[in-house]
Image (cartoon, rainbow, N blue to C red; front, side):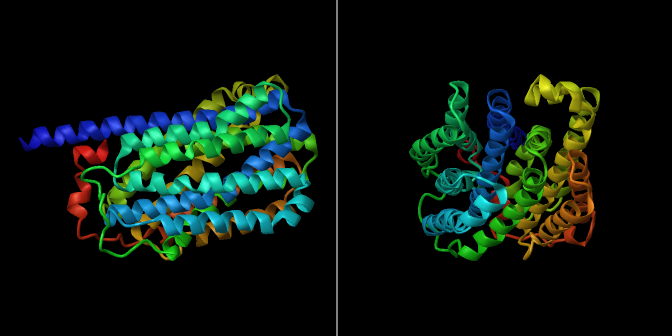
Length: 417
């Protein structure tokens, strides 16, 4: 009977994991399709503006990723704790930072004021879903999480994709994205409504605090800053044509970066309750996935660039393995940092901020201001950061032990559904 029950649980988790993987593929597919369409429908200068705006939204909206991580870890340990207040504060702070940075963004990145304003408005719609996604993830309701991820992807990207197809410019494309991002919020709230056996009543334990969101959010922000910084530097230091070409290369980087992240999504709740052995398995899977993607880019580099940006960029195929390897290394970094967040590390973001600083110094003062120069700086920074976080002292964090660990390791049928 025990073997039958265990097999049934593994089957449900396998189905839930497959659903999350499909949702992640849809999300990543739409995210990659957007710059690919931009490369075909916009001139190089407009493509660079769009890619920079999307990077800024990703960086500012990473507060939502931090919120999701914090909610997921807290819900895994203490189901049912309220999270509305910290959600509203997180969204307000993230958008406020974009507003405060407007003069710098306009001057340094040569972005129109309207574009920066749309980035700020979009940030709120990107941060708020972190509450609902985190609740579903922490409670291991992975089937509903998969649906929520798919709905969120449509909200973030579908409007902009349609706008590009019909010939809209950068501003109209971003405006379409704002409208669809807000339209899907009620659907996400409905998907995350509490169900039986998932902590639908308030928990008497410790509530989620702002400092917990700040710790996870700072780490998530550092992850995105260090992985998107090369694109920002390319926008600032290269010609419009070279900057546009570099943005096409980073499509390959982001593909290798996000492809294996479903493994981390599924593992986080178990890591949060002390399953330390799972960390090695997660890193092995993520590393193997990255190796496969890098090998594929070696064999089909020109095709990868042609697919990402069109025939005009096919001649850059020799650089495909380096862009893909950078993403694969950062995928390992992200998995290691998520394990630290789950284990309760006090400063999980510190190595990432150091890496971002090194990348800035190398790009601004050491490397030649060429596509190849920035590419090599990004690759070297990713490699050293991965070595430090996967094998260095930062990797040794004592995992958090929850009183309900045994329960959390064996989710019910309702939890995985």
